Image (tube, rainbow, N blue to C red; front, side, top):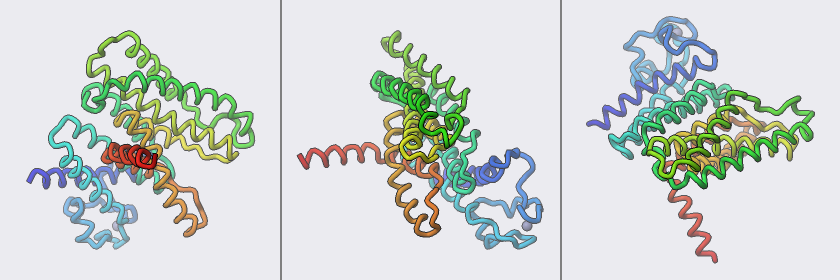
Length: 325
Ligand SMILES: [Zn+2]
């Protein structure tokens, strides 16, 4: 019974996410005005706006002007409802549940906006990053293994130094691409440096940090390593192949993934995403002779796979290696 309620709640949230997916890229309010048909502008009555049901009853068409309403509307409602149900079945009524549901909402909007417009709105990535950091401070269960703080802090510091070096040599190699380095977001960089200071403080001056502080430090490490890994790879790709490959939206999306899931899961998502991306990229290249694809959806897919099967994947890789020896 409760699973049914969660599923329905998910479909209602999904119908709101549809509004975000359409309006955020246009910089319009997601609250006003209420839903209306994109072609005839007629406001949609409540009985034509029932999640999952109305689209099917109306045969995917506006009641008045009969214009087709994209299947995406139904798909987003269905996927959101399904993810709500899956997360409830996996975690039950646990403090983790609301945190992961916020994350999945950000994932849905990022994925479908990226697929259509090749951008990821800051409201979702940066907003999601802040949500992940704040939730981590209050829900320590998000980052239970605080023993990873020292190693994580070390990797985070290393990645920041690597990124600084790469962005310093970037103009020498890629002058023909851009006048300055591709991703110049000052507030974001200031946040990275402040986070590094906080992590260093926790690691050096707090013998046993309180759970909330440790969890926040872990979220900050996750955000730096997630963003740093893809940023470094982008710069390196540009330098080696002399071809623009950077997407600032992907950097911020990885920042959010790291804040919610921690640096290990974020790194695993980063390594898994290209496998999905390569498969779809090859299909697209054959189909449309254009291999540029939206990368955000694959990062999201990688994050979900890492969250649910990360442990099994790592075990499988390690054991495979052991058997071969
Ligand atoms: Zn219409």
